[in-house]
Length: 370
Image 1 (tube, rainbow, N blue to C red):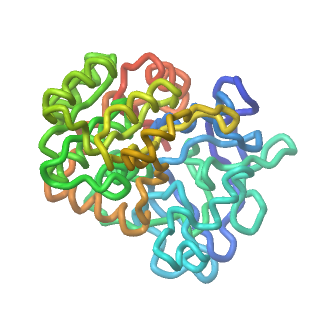
Image 2 (image 1 turned 60 degrees about the vertical axis):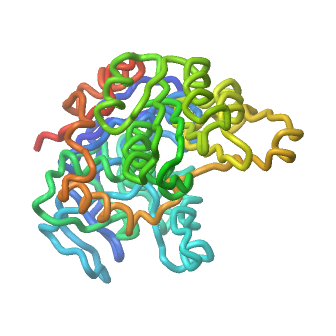
């Protein structure tokens, strides 16, 4: 069958629309009609080269849709089911999955080529094979994906907001709750209030932090943070440090969460300086693999027992976190509708990313037309 998709042909290129041939599902695979996809900063990292991939590639790794067809051996999912795609495949059997660290599943090694687990591709055009961002390629009307990337959800959850829990929501939430280990009464500072940072705000607030300080230079981002759980906001790291010193009576923040779009040495340094003795810095944002952006004095790392660590998918299990996020949404405990600033059509994907880079959106959503 044919599908219309937004693709990238190389580093620095704009998104293009292309009509591609899509193969039907093989054993262990599912054909999905996507309804909505989140415009996450990670796809722009693919455009800039900060995330190394094989080109050409179909973009999109946050998505929700309806199952159209299943391949042999697929159980638990049938045509007509609503699903969210996890941007991290989960095999359930490798060393890391068996230890409860399925966000680090060995299938993640496929994310460079973005082929399916059997090493082949399902999208083709002009004599070329097209990868699918994070094996799912949600910037396409249809996609064939591995069952390891599909999570069945209840039919009453709007797919337009369910798409967000494929990446940004549980990544931000888990940065605070799982990787950060925020506890009641803590002081938490969050650097960067985009699609991930805003959910770190929600997670820290939900976990009972007494002070949630959201740091972003843009007034609209700070306003959104205040609406979703931030107790204080700051336009700069320096302003945030003054707040932390005052609120903690000079002790320092318990946790600093780095969720900026592009991680720099400056923001890492600010976060490290902001936390107390035995405080933690959690780095969820990205920069290119060749960029050395963490340079810290081991003197204070050792004598103050500070901790700095990375977090992928907020340290959570996609097949556990995604349904749980939607349960919290339906219970009114997690805000999803309020995250969506703008919606776009597939042909407007370049405008959507320009709006993201211009700081206009907390989160943009791409709505597929069929």
